[in-house]
Length: 168
Image (cartoon, rainbow, N blue to C red; front, top):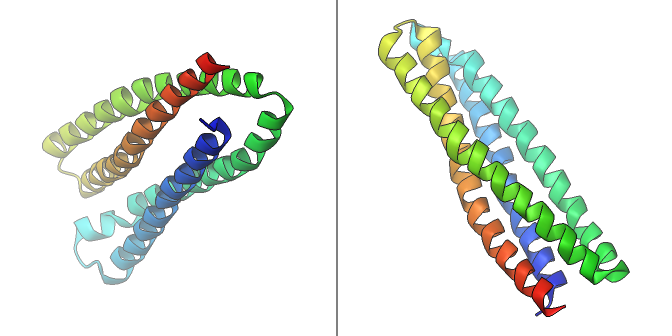
């Protein structure tokens, strides 16, 4: 089993996945421009700022994660060629930490935020609050979908790292 190839493939797949944050962030920004140009009602006008903020946040997340994974691909080869055992141990530790973060943030905090926003929609009738809550739900859903698939990939990657660690 070639763990360097596995690691590089995982990171390249993450680059594609995190690029989706950039694409969807741009879609949010274009939607915000659409609300600004064509919104005639109070609720349509209320979406301008929340949707643009969500778009910028998704762009920031996407650019940051994409840059991190691009640099990780090149660092993998250097680290592996320097000391393969240390590389595997370091990656196992990093994957474990990431899996814990997914559990706490993606699968606990984000659903709580979505529920809180749903309650805001039910109990507050102000257009800006409703637009903000709906936009937050949309953004959190995007994060949940993308990170849900990333979680599955890093779990599989972690299992391969553990196997590679046992073989060395």
